[in-house]
Image 1 (tube, rainbow, N blue to C red):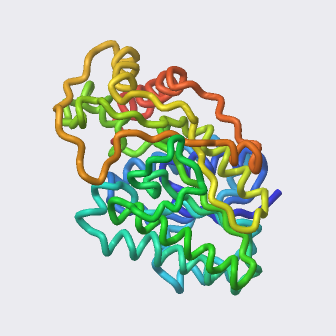
Image 2: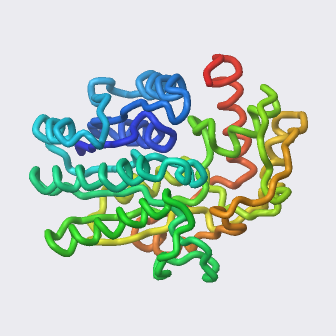
Length: 326
C-alpha cells in the first residue's frame, strides 16, 4: 500500500487513475480546484463515481485546492506523507491556450514548481508528470520518439508542458528528484472531458451542439483508451527511474474521419459536423513510439479503437444521457 498525492483527481484521467489506485489498495489524497474550464458538474459526477466504486472510501481523501496556492500545497505535505506525486492537474487544450497564455503558464509551470518545491521539503517523493504529445510540435520523426528535441511547440499549452518537463530535469540534476514525464497521446474514454472530440461528436448527435470537423477529418490521431493510459501512469508511480520522458499511446494512428464513423455506428445515427480548416496550432499526424514505455514500465495497451469507442459510448449513454449530467 502506498500513499499517493494525485492532482487533477476530479478530471478525466485523474478520476480514472484514482479508481485504479484505490482498487489496488493505495491511499489516494486527491487534489482538484474544480474550475469551470468545463462544467464542474462533470467533475462532481466523476468524484461521485470514484466514491461509489471505492473498495475502502476512507482511503480516498479529497481536497479542493488549487496547485497555484503555495500555502495550500504546503499544508497538504505537512499533513500527509507521500510515496509518490502523480501530477495530472493542468489547464488543458491546445487551441484554448492561445486565448489565455498567462493562465496556462501559471497553472502548468507555476503549479508544477509548487509541487516540486513542496516535495523537496517533505521527503522528495517520486514525481510523475502528465505531459503531452503536442510537445513534439511539427516533427518529421514518425513515429514520435522521446529522443526528439521537441523544441518547437505550436501553442502555449504544449510550451508550458515542455517547460515543466525541463524544470523536472533541473530538480533531478540538482537534487536527485525522480521525475517521469509521460507524454499522453489523444486519450479518450469514460469520464472524458466535454471539450474532447469523442465527447463532442456524441453531444452533436444527441444534443445538436455545433462541432467542427477540421480538415474534413483527414487527420490521424493515436487514439488511446484511458484504461491503457492509467496502466502506464500507475506503473510509473511504482518505478523510480531518475529522469525519463516516456510516450504513452497505442502506437496505431487512426484517421479522424474513421474515428467519427465508429462513434456514429455505436450511436446508430450520423453526426452533423461542420468542415473547417485545420488550425495553425494543430498537426495532421500523431503516432507514438511506445518501445520505451514497454521496456521501462511494462506498458501494454490492450484496448482497440473499436472496443474503446464502444465502451465510451456505453458510459456516455448511462452517465450523460440517462443521468442528465454535462
